[in-house]
Image 1: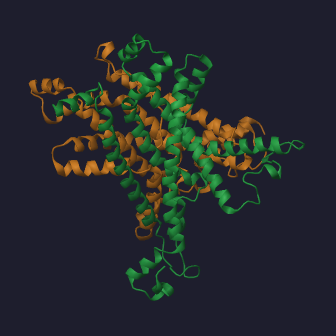
Image 2 (image 1 turned 60 degrees about the vertical axis):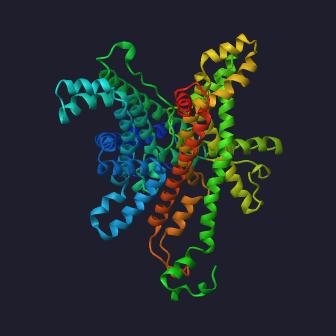
Image 3 (image 1 turned 90 degrees about the vertical axis):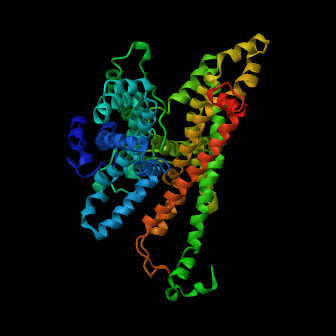
Length: 268
Length: 294
């Protein structure tokens, strides 16, 4: 079987298009690359959707945590502590069984026991909490001069937030937020290892890498391939976020610009 | 556990729970919490020493050693750690068995990798097929510890490397002016002072280490996640004296609370430690302490 044929059969296997049966023996390198690459679709889906939605919620959380009103501050503080203080792995488990229980009483929760919705919600809440904390930190270190200047121009409320505080917050938070994005991208690999079932063997990249390692007892091929894919996409994230960072800092003189510092990723 | 537990079907709710939560399997569940704590207690110092040697190697003027240290630090970037965990456990296991195979069975003529199988001679199996159950469990635990130490050692190395570089340059110059050798400068000036710069990173690492412990489950250890899944699952009266529905949600809620409490406690303790270490340091924190006492 040629490699092109393999790509046609398994290129979209992770979303259920193509050959149904996974290869069982005589695995070729091409099959390794194709299937693990196909699983990356899920990692990218989880990362992109969770980051985009989480970004909005994180902004709200940061503002709430920075607010003087305890009715807004306390819930935000608790929310952030809850999701930052416990392992994501346990959160996945808990959410899965919670949705499983709820499904019994309300059919509405049916899709949430599948990874595409259930795990996505957990990732969304989790990244919101982590980025909310980053944004909150940035919110507190906005130079006093900036807000003073905004006040002097007669800005207040929404225009001041929209035009002064929010852009400055983003600018200050961006290097840390880039790390968070990479972090979340790597965390997507936990999804199929934490109860969420890979229905009809439609799993993410690690799921397939693990499948190969289990079948061949040889970890030295699938995991480096997986690592290669992740390094490539991590570089894509760094490039993308670097471009945004450049735009956020475009009004500043060269030496005052914040550099992206990519720190080693950690488990959450 | 209690005398009235002989016939659970007739008990009142409170007594039923007191019996249910003290059954033998629940005791295993409680013991698995100690497994997690033991893993933390063993891994943290080992990872710290790995990190220390990694950072020392990275600073070395001898180039190959420096590359080795830098390579060790750099290889954990960009790759999801869970992949490392899954990879290292199999790879280490096979490496050990392969080494033993080479030593114990030199006259073995078949290839070790036969298609999909990894075959070593019986005497090289780890643990030996004849050894008792607890040997198998502790071998798994041992592999998990090494894997954790290797991965977290790399993180610790990068934190300590940063800490060593953050020691004010004037301090090192002064040491040189006093005629200290590089070795003396390192041990007497840099090492005592670097901790205050490394501690924020290290405490972050400790939090992450706590939150990484559920991954033990993926390494095949019977840890708290394993038991929570086992115990919480639906039980019918056919197999147990304590039938119940699907309670896994509550077991995981309990784990969630356990971790939250543990991280909170660590936060408080590390805050105390930071206050102690900042004492008398030439940092803004140390300066603030000095001003407060004057």
